[in-house]
Image (spheres, each protein chain N blue to C red):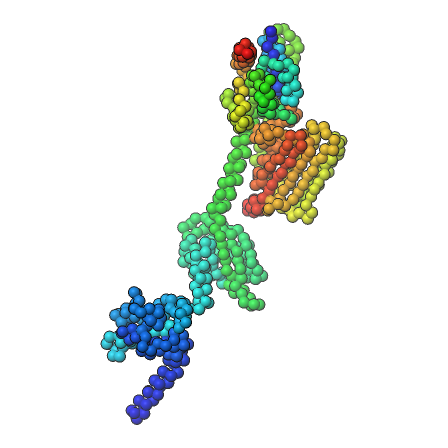
Length: 487
Length: 136
């Protein structure tokens, strides 16, 4: 009976050796304490070549002495299993990454380690890619999370964990915004619904309570036509960029205020000079008993008091601190309104006023009244410049176009043009080239309105050739202002 | 002989004021509200002094000044700039005229003027013109 059992056990061992040892899809070898390979399966031979009478370092590393750091030596010493990731060469000398799992074998259970059995498997490209993807997922400088259809975070990368903590299993709206309910206009919800990529700007709170602003893109994780079970959220922290943008806008606004104050002072000085002049002439007239001098002085006082009133009125309307009332506006419609308004006036002076409009231009958020005022100022200045030049064939052209993410309005004339000094001054003071006829507030108002839209105004001009005033509105800024005004 | 002063100023009241102040003191004055026309007057009457505004229609005072200083025959005429752009007697001339071969004007006077100080400057500059002529 016992013998029959022993026979069975031997048969099973033989079977294990024949079937398992030989058939496992790995390279298996047994190594003794002198680093000799004493047994190996057929896979091992097929991969590493002839192993009999060779040592492990010769077969694996093609060297004639043991490795400086030897795993086998350590296993013989401490009897513990090892898994190593190392580069070894096959029988043709091709080097590749391998995972080697090595385990001790003892003939007597409590005795020393007699042999080491080890399984070698080549790290395939897929494995390597997987490792690289994992690395990329963790190290890429933006937040990546995967959320399930209950909006729970099931995966989060290192950057995200750094800013928001270890949050697996928590609701994304709780983590990003400390809310108890889903966010309104949630881009992930849209992606779950339509399987499409969505993007939006959001504000959140990080783990230490600081406000952050980020742009989040949501993509579906889906196979074929199955419903979306997970959404991947990739967010870029734009807090610093937003802060810089705000600072730039603020600096531009402050610069405009400083220039406005300087301009106001300049204007007042001229009026004061007129008042002083009137006073001087009256007192001189009294001294000389010259009625005509007194009358001229009195007229001068009247004119300059009137100028003060006009200046104060203009200035108050200019300084009305209001945010632009943005609504989706078609730029071409605005230009057509201006053409209708000024065409006849221009024609009376022999000036042709025409539009050069980009067909099918997209509507953008603008304050139509403000832009109307700007165009009015620029067009009336252009008509004046043409009148001043007195040339025949004068033209004023209003253009609209899209250019590198900017909406452009341009008012060009072939009138008198300006020289360098005037160009430098036109926006910085209450500067007028119209003698007593203008307060010099038109262009300053225009610039202020354009700046309130986050835009800028550029002038190109050549004396005797004409001028070109260009209002540039970055569409991203318009969108940003629109969103802010929406809140 | 009467000293001749050319006033280049587009603001009519300011021009009339300066003209009256100077004529009361016995100067012979010429008033122009346009830099282009004023340049012709300079060539014609060769004033002893020019009172020049900066911001004027068509040609600015700075452009006029540069033309004047580039003209060998007219360069020696002293210029006093009378402008609201001057603050506490200071004016960043080189911001407008970076060309260092063009010398800055003799004097800047801020609007509104103080009559006595203005007359004193005019007197000094027209007298300096005398000594310069004498040296020639």
